[in-house]
Image 1 (cartoon, rainbow, N blue to C red):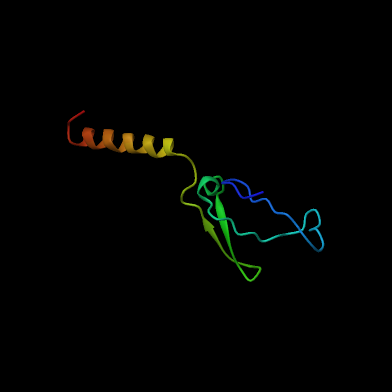
Image 2 (cartoon, rainbow, N blue to C red):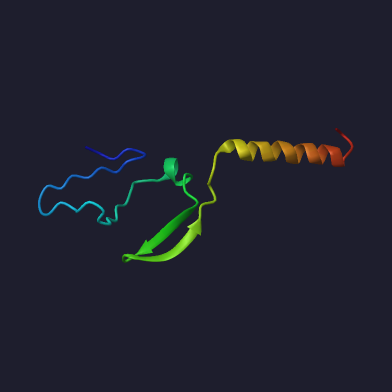
Length: 82
């Protein structure tokens, strides 16, 4: 059993199994494929939330591409090229 890009499975080999709903702090290898699915990221140190940061990667490429096309169209119109 090993981590994937979207899941961080765990196996308890000894000791008590965490209770359903118990908070666990797990450190994924990387979060690139999933971080853009959230509006904010919690920055935690020693079990305490230090900061809540807006995720600038929120969303997909299409809105960025659409905005770029609008910017280019506006620029052409401003210069009398459209």
